[in-house]
Image (cartoon, rainbow, N blue to C red; front, side, top):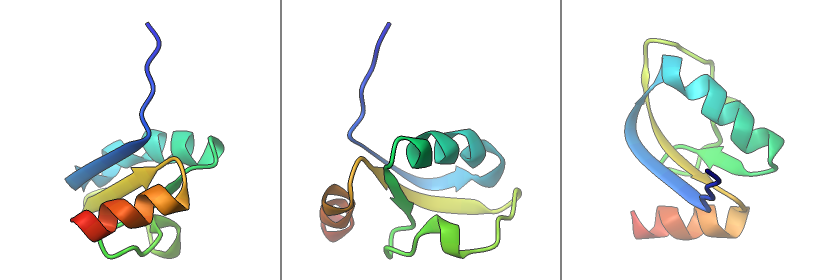
Length: 69
């Protein structure tokens, strides 16, 4: 089965579950940030913390999602 997502939004994503998705998005040249637009790359990774995540295939879509939130 093949699937395709242009964007993903999750409030309270568990840090220990974030790694694989983060890598997939970055390798596919997507963008990932918190709800304020701060890239998740900019912070210290804490496996027991919960993260608000907005991931998208491109920056324009990510900005639009954050505007709608």
